[in-house]
Image (cartoon, rainbow, N blue to C red):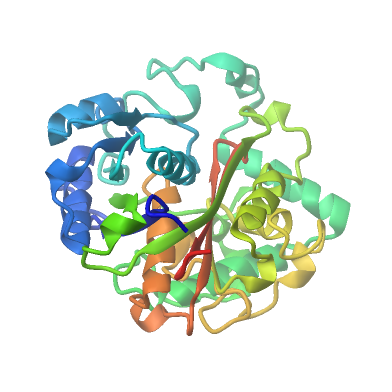
Length: 389
């Protein structure tokens, strides 16, 4: 380790699940203030900024002006829900190469409170005037909204490997169990496999409870050097490995409906970290839908391709299970304001610090956050450690 080794020194969450008094910029501000308080870093010390706009109002350059940040490094990359794992990769490289010293990664969204109002610029290429841009325009005439793209993947996985709806449902059940330990989660009442299968079909084979919720919320992560972190309030969390990859953007161009770019990012991130899936104490996986979790478990190497359905058994993903996953309740039950990747990082840090309360995984030393953006398109995987490599 060197003095410029990149670490996470501060985290902050905005209020959720519904906060109509806050707009997206308000969520940024609240999360940032809490991250600054958490770390002891002064705002004027931030010289790197990474964020993505939700409605075209909070892009990186605009937020730099609003926040009064005089940056030496700025990044407004947008790869959907995985973008914050990409940002960790970018920030670590920028810090280690001396491009900047302290990076703020931030997100804010009033997605739930804004429902029913004009959303303006939409995700995935919608121009806001009803037209679809780019390659997605060739998918939309066939009635392919976001959920049906994931349903395609789920149905293909069932066809190829015999995966069952019960296996997917168990993912939702376990993650809801974790949400029951989080007083801030939108849904905390435990559910059963039968409850999931009895919920209305949204896009065959995905039921309502196979799908993520919609909330408001925001998050902030502060990264700096190991040397600087010695003078701060929290023990640093080390970025041991990070990798990002993309296989497609529009679903019609996905090379395989049952394999994502996490099959690339997982091995790369683990190799950089010098660890294997067997060393991981907690997983924070993007759970836009239950099928997303199953694919990530396979592609990251926690089982072989096609064996995810057999891997899933009652309690596996709970805080006391063999693979504690989405210990805050995930996007399926706790918080999903549009791009959830930053919440994966924040929960991973909380676990490594031992600050996860009732959901704490005992003796947590290695955590993985793996985000998914677009239509199972862009994958970012980050391996974090309580100690440096």
